[in-house]
Amino acid sequence: MYHFVINSHAKSKLGHKIWDDIERYLIENNFEYKKYFTSEAGSAARFASEITREKDEFPTIVVLGGDGTLNEVLNGIRNIEQVTLGYIPIGSSNDFGRGMNITRDYLSELKKIINPKKFIQLDYGVATYGGESKRFLVSSGIGFDAAVCYEVNHSPLKKLLNHLRLGKFTYGLVAIKQLAGIPYIKGTITLDNNEVKFYDKIFFSAIHVQKYEGGGYMFCPKADPTDGYLDICVAEKISKIRALTMLPGAKKGNHVKCRGIHVFRCKKAVFQMERKQFVHIDGETTEHSKSKEVLFETSPDKIRFIAG
Image (cartoon, rainbow, N blue to C red; front, side):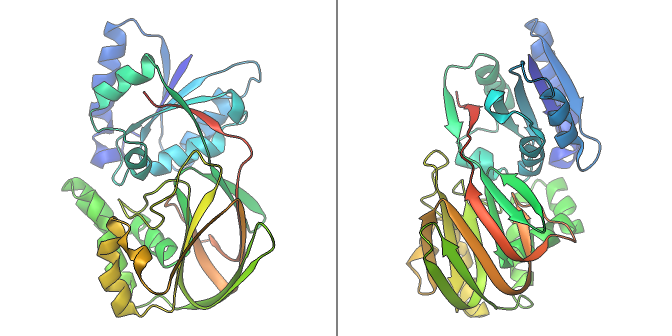
Protein backbone atom coordinates (compact mmCIF):
# COMPACT_ATOMS: atom_id res chain seq x y z
CA MET A 1 0.00 0.00 0.00
CA TYR A 2 1.17 3.52 -0.82
CA HIS A 3 0.82 6.13 1.93
CA PHE A 4 1.22 9.81 1.02
CA VAL A 5 2.26 12.13 3.87
CA ILE A 6 1.62 15.70 2.74
CA ASN A 7 2.82 18.98 4.23
CA SER A 8 0.11 21.14 2.69
CA HIS A 9 1.73 24.31 4.07
CA ALA A 10 4.99 23.74 2.18
CA LYS A 11 5.94 26.17 -0.58
CA SER A 12 4.00 28.96 1.10
CA LYS A 13 0.84 26.83 1.26
CA LEU A 14 1.11 25.71 -2.37
CA GLY A 15 1.25 22.15 -1.05
CA HIS A 16 -2.51 21.77 -1.38
CA LYS A 17 -2.48 22.75 -5.05
CA ILE A 18 0.40 20.39 -5.79
CA TRP A 19 -1.38 17.56 -3.99
CA ASP A 20 -4.60 18.28 -5.91
CA ASP A 21 -2.71 17.78 -9.18
CA ILE A 22 -1.09 14.59 -7.89
CA GLU A 23 -4.34 13.18 -6.53
CA ARG A 24 -6.12 13.89 -9.79
CA TYR A 25 -3.48 11.81 -11.60
CA LEU A 26 -3.78 8.96 -9.08
CA ILE A 27 -7.58 8.87 -9.41
CA GLU A 28 -7.44 8.98 -13.20
CA ASN A 29 -5.09 5.98 -13.14
CA ASN A 30 -7.12 4.04 -10.55
CA PHE A 31 -4.16 3.95 -8.18
CA GLU A 32 -4.83 2.75 -4.63
CA TYR A 33 -3.43 4.94 -1.86
CA LYS A 34 -4.02 6.58 1.51
CA LYS A 35 -3.31 10.23 2.34
CA TYR A 36 -2.35 12.08 5.52
CA PHE A 37 -2.14 15.86 5.90
CA THR A 38 0.21 17.31 8.52
CA SER A 39 -1.35 19.92 10.77
CA GLU A 40 1.44 20.72 13.24
CA ALA A 41 4.97 19.80 14.24
CA GLY A 42 5.07 16.08 14.98
CA SER A 43 2.15 15.14 12.73
CA ALA A 44 4.32 13.46 10.09
CA ALA A 45 6.15 11.40 12.74
CA ARG A 46 2.83 10.23 14.21
CA PHE A 47 1.52 9.24 10.80
CA ALA A 48 4.70 7.27 10.02
CA SER A 49 4.43 5.50 13.36
CA GLU A 50 0.82 4.54 12.68
CA ILE A 51 1.59 3.35 9.15
CA THR A 52 4.42 1.10 10.36
CA ARG A 53 2.63 -0.22 13.44
CA GLU A 54 2.09 -3.72 11.98
CA LYS A 55 5.27 -5.80 11.73
CA ASP A 56 3.97 -7.99 8.89
CA GLU A 57 3.30 -5.10 6.49
CA PHE A 58 5.73 -3.56 3.99
CA PRO A 59 4.37 -0.08 3.21
CA THR A 60 5.62 2.53 0.78
CA ILE A 61 5.60 5.99 2.33
CA VAL A 62 5.76 8.94 -0.07
CA VAL A 63 6.62 12.29 1.52
CA LEU A 64 5.48 15.59 -0.01
CA GLY A 65 7.24 18.39 1.82
CA GLY A 66 10.69 19.66 2.70
CA ASP A 67 13.63 18.18 4.57
CA GLY A 68 11.87 18.75 7.91
CA THR A 69 8.81 16.71 6.93
CA LEU A 70 11.05 13.97 5.55
CA ASN A 71 13.00 13.92 8.82
CA GLU A 72 9.82 13.60 10.88
CA VAL A 73 8.72 10.61 8.82
CA LEU A 74 12.14 8.99 9.17
CA ASN A 75 12.01 9.37 12.95
CA GLY A 76 8.45 8.06 13.16
CA ILE A 77 9.08 4.81 11.27
CA ARG A 78 9.07 1.77 13.57
CA ASN A 79 10.38 -1.08 11.38
CA ILE A 80 12.68 0.76 9.03
CA GLU A 81 13.93 -2.33 7.19
CA GLN A 82 10.35 -3.06 6.02
CA VAL A 83 9.64 0.40 4.57
CA THR A 84 10.13 1.76 1.08
CA LEU A 85 10.47 5.54 0.93
CA GLY A 86 9.54 7.92 -1.88
CA TYR A 87 9.96 11.69 -1.93
CA ILE A 88 8.48 14.61 -3.86
CA PRO A 89 10.24 17.84 -2.79
CA ILE A 90 7.94 20.81 -2.23
CA GLY A 91 9.84 22.56 0.57
CA SER A 92 12.02 25.67 0.53
CA SER A 93 15.55 24.25 0.71
CA ASN A 94 15.08 20.62 -0.44
CA ASP A 95 18.68 19.57 0.21
CA PHE A 96 17.77 15.88 0.21
CA GLY A 97 16.10 16.26 -3.19
CA ARG A 98 19.09 18.22 -4.47
CA GLY A 99 21.51 15.54 -3.30
CA MET A 100 19.44 12.74 -4.83
CA ASN A 101 18.93 14.64 -8.13
CA ILE A 102 15.15 14.73 -7.69
CA THR A 103 13.53 17.28 -9.99
CA ARG A 104 10.84 19.87 -9.15
CA ASP A 105 8.57 18.30 -11.79
CA TYR A 106 6.30 16.64 -9.24
CA LEU A 107 4.15 14.74 -11.74
CA SER A 108 7.24 13.32 -13.40
CA GLU A 109 8.59 12.25 -10.00
CA LEU A 110 5.21 10.77 -9.07
CA LYS A 111 5.25 8.55 -12.17
CA LYS A 112 8.67 7.19 -11.17
CA ILE A 113 7.47 6.50 -7.65
CA ILE A 114 4.31 4.59 -8.56
CA ASN A 115 6.15 2.65 -11.30
CA PRO A 116 9.56 2.18 -9.66
CA LYS A 117 12.44 0.66 -11.59
CA LYS A 118 15.38 1.55 -9.37
CA PHE A 119 15.89 1.35 -5.60
CA ILE A 120 18.80 2.53 -3.43
CA GLN A 121 19.66 1.44 0.09
CA LEU A 122 20.28 4.78 1.80
CA ASP A 123 22.34 5.52 4.90
CA TYR A 124 21.02 7.63 7.69
CA GLY A 125 22.76 9.09 10.72
CA VAL A 126 21.80 9.03 14.37
CA ALA A 127 22.55 11.89 16.76
CA THR A 128 22.31 11.21 20.51
CA TYR A 129 22.29 13.99 23.08
CA GLY A 130 20.31 14.98 26.15
CA GLY A 131 19.23 11.36 26.64
CA GLU A 132 17.52 11.22 23.25
CA SER A 133 18.44 9.82 19.82
CA LYS A 134 17.30 11.33 16.51
CA ARG A 135 17.78 10.09 12.96
CA PHE A 136 18.87 12.31 10.07
CA LEU A 137 18.96 11.74 6.30
CA VAL A 138 20.69 14.95 5.21
CA SER A 139 22.94 16.42 7.90
CA SER A 140 23.33 17.48 11.48
CA GLY A 141 25.50 20.21 12.93
CA ILE A 142 26.80 22.05 15.96
CA GLY A 143 27.59 25.73 16.40
CA PHE A 144 27.19 28.33 13.70
CA ASP A 145 25.13 26.36 11.17
CA ALA A 146 22.86 25.00 13.93
CA ALA A 147 22.29 28.52 15.29
CA VAL A 148 21.48 29.68 11.76
CA CYS A 149 18.96 26.82 11.40
CA TYR A 150 17.35 27.83 14.67
CA GLU A 151 16.88 31.44 13.54
CA VAL A 152 15.72 30.39 10.06
CA ASN A 153 13.00 28.21 11.60
CA HIS A 154 11.85 30.96 13.98
CA SER A 155 12.17 33.98 11.71
CA PRO A 156 9.42 35.72 9.70
CA LEU A 157 12.07 36.15 6.99
CA LYS A 158 11.64 32.51 5.90
CA LYS A 159 7.88 32.95 5.40
CA LEU A 160 8.42 36.17 3.47
CA LEU A 161 11.06 34.70 1.15
CA ASN A 162 9.02 31.53 0.62
CA HIS A 163 6.06 33.71 -0.35
CA LEU A 164 8.32 35.47 -2.89
CA ARG A 165 9.62 32.08 -4.14
CA LEU A 166 13.07 33.01 -2.78
CA GLY A 167 13.18 30.56 0.11
CA LYS A 168 16.56 29.13 -0.92
CA PHE A 169 18.21 32.45 0.03
CA THR A 170 16.97 32.39 3.63
CA TYR A 171 19.91 30.42 5.00
CA GLY A 172 22.52 32.69 3.41
CA LEU A 173 20.91 35.90 4.63
CA VAL A 174 20.47 34.63 8.19
CA ALA A 175 24.04 33.27 8.13
CA ILE A 176 25.40 36.74 7.38
CA LYS A 177 23.37 38.17 10.28
CA GLN A 178 24.51 35.43 12.67
CA LEU A 179 28.22 35.83 11.94
CA ALA A 180 28.65 38.72 14.35
CA GLY A 181 27.20 36.99 17.38
CA ILE A 182 28.36 33.35 17.25
CA PRO A 183 31.12 32.62 19.80
CA TYR A 184 34.00 30.23 19.13
CA ILE A 185 34.03 27.04 21.17
CA LYS A 186 36.72 24.74 22.52
CA GLY A 187 36.18 21.00 22.21
CA THR A 188 37.32 17.52 21.25
CA ILE A 189 36.10 14.94 18.73
CA THR A 190 36.71 11.23 19.36
CA LEU A 191 36.55 9.08 16.22
CA ASP A 192 36.04 5.36 15.43
CA ASN A 193 39.53 4.22 16.39
CA ASN A 194 39.59 6.35 19.56
CA GLU A 195 41.62 8.99 17.77
CA VAL A 196 41.00 12.28 19.57
CA LYS A 197 41.09 15.61 17.74
CA PHE A 198 41.53 18.76 19.85
CA TYR A 199 40.24 22.15 18.69
CA ASP A 200 40.66 25.50 20.47
CA LYS A 201 38.36 27.75 18.41
CA ILE A 202 35.61 25.81 16.62
CA PHE A 203 33.34 27.99 14.52
CA PHE A 204 31.04 25.19 13.40
CA SER A 205 30.93 21.44 12.81
CA ALA A 206 28.79 19.91 10.05
CA ILE A 207 28.03 16.19 9.97
CA HIS A 208 26.74 15.00 6.61
CA VAL A 209 25.06 12.02 5.00
CA GLN A 210 24.15 14.00 1.86
CA LYS A 211 26.35 16.61 0.15
CA TYR A 212 24.08 19.60 0.68
CA GLU A 213 22.52 21.49 3.55
CA GLY A 214 21.07 24.93 4.21
CA GLY A 215 19.71 25.41 0.69
CA GLY A 216 22.66 24.11 -1.34
CA TYR A 217 25.82 24.55 0.75
CA MET A 218 28.29 21.68 0.25
CA PHE A 219 30.16 21.71 3.53
CA CYS A 220 31.08 18.05 2.85
CA PRO A 221 31.28 17.85 -0.96
CA LYS A 222 32.36 14.19 -1.04
CA ALA A 223 29.55 12.90 1.15
CA ASP A 224 27.95 9.75 -0.29
CA PRO A 225 24.60 8.56 1.16
CA THR A 226 25.37 4.92 0.29
CA ASP A 227 28.93 4.42 1.59
CA GLY A 228 28.15 3.75 5.25
CA TYR A 229 30.13 6.75 6.50
CA LEU A 230 29.48 10.19 7.90
CA ASP A 231 31.45 13.09 6.42
CA ILE A 232 32.44 15.78 8.90
CA CYS A 233 33.56 19.36 8.31
CA VAL A 234 35.03 21.36 11.19
CA ALA A 235 35.80 25.06 10.73
CA GLU A 236 38.41 26.23 13.25
CA LYS A 237 40.30 29.47 13.92
CA ILE A 238 38.49 31.35 11.16
CA SER A 239 37.77 35.04 11.58
CA LYS A 240 34.21 36.25 11.09
CA ILE A 241 35.28 38.34 8.09
CA ARG A 242 37.04 35.36 6.52
CA ALA A 243 34.01 33.19 7.16
CA LEU A 244 31.88 35.71 5.31
CA THR A 245 34.13 35.52 2.25
CA MET A 246 34.25 31.71 2.39
CA LEU A 247 30.51 31.16 2.60
CA PRO A 248 29.77 31.69 -1.12
CA GLY A 249 32.54 29.20 -2.00
CA ALA A 250 30.82 26.56 0.12
CA LYS A 251 28.06 26.42 -2.51
CA LYS A 252 30.58 24.57 -4.70
CA GLY A 253 32.59 22.96 -1.93
CA ASN A 254 35.60 25.22 -2.56
CA HIS A 255 35.91 26.11 1.13
CA VAL A 256 37.64 22.77 1.81
CA LYS A 257 40.83 24.20 0.25
CA CYS A 258 41.01 26.95 2.89
CA ARG A 259 43.19 26.94 5.97
CA GLY A 260 41.21 26.10 9.10
CA ILE A 261 38.79 23.73 7.35
CA HIS A 262 39.14 20.09 8.45
CA VAL A 263 37.23 17.36 6.59
CA PHE A 264 37.23 13.69 7.51
CA ARG A 265 35.07 10.55 7.40
CA CYS A 266 34.03 8.13 10.12
CA LYS A 267 31.26 5.83 11.28
CA LYS A 268 31.14 7.29 14.77
CA ALA A 269 32.18 10.60 16.37
CA VAL A 270 31.72 11.92 19.89
CA PHE A 271 31.76 15.72 20.21
CA GLN A 272 32.57 17.12 23.66
CA MET A 273 32.41 20.91 24.05
CA GLU A 274 33.18 23.26 26.90
CA ARG A 275 29.66 24.70 26.92
CA LYS A 276 26.27 23.92 25.44
CA GLN A 277 25.75 24.56 21.74
CA PHE A 278 22.76 24.42 19.40
CA VAL A 279 22.40 21.10 17.56
CA HIS A 280 20.37 20.85 14.35
CA ILE A 281 18.93 17.65 12.89
CA ASP A 282 18.20 17.96 9.15
CA GLY A 283 17.90 21.72 9.67
CA GLU A 284 15.46 21.46 12.57
CA THR A 285 16.17 22.86 16.05
CA THR A 286 14.17 23.73 19.14
CA GLU A 287 14.79 25.89 22.18
CA HIS A 288 15.94 22.78 24.04
CA SER A 289 18.31 21.46 21.37
CA LYS A 290 21.54 22.42 23.12
CA SER A 291 24.16 20.10 24.51
CA LYS A 292 27.81 19.82 25.57
CA GLU A 293 28.19 16.25 24.29
CA VAL A 294 26.76 14.72 21.11
CA LEU A 295 27.32 11.26 19.66
CA PHE A 296 26.97 10.95 15.89
CA GLU A 297 27.00 7.58 14.16
CA THR A 298 25.76 5.82 11.06
CA SER A 299 22.97 3.35 11.57
CA PRO A 300 23.73 -0.30 10.75
CA ASP A 301 20.32 -0.35 9.04
CA LYS A 302 19.52 1.34 5.75
CA ILE A 303 16.26 2.54 4.25
CA ARG A 304 15.02 1.44 0.83
CA PHE A 305 14.47 4.47 -1.38
CA ILE A 306 12.77 4.75 -4.77
CA ALA A 307 15.39 6.34 -7.02
CA GLY A 308 13.80 6.04 -10.44
